Length: 118
Image: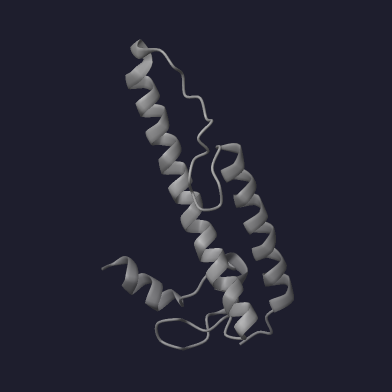
């Protein structure tokens, strides 16, 4: 296996995390995924359907960002525990190419493919 730059991976993860937190804030959501109570989606009764649709769309994006943030946090925890780069399912090394492409990876390609097929 090629030598992998874990320091660079940790920096990339922290940068991605910061970017995701910023995106959540722009959508009016906390890191937890909860929307701020003061978001105004419009107030008139006639716009209720449009407001509901917009809120549903925002919630979908927030859920996606929150899931990405959770994956990054799991990978950062693995960096801190010294288990970064080891597949959570099979215990084998995750390829350097995969970690370079997706630093938040916690599974090797084989286990990720199996998990996606479930």
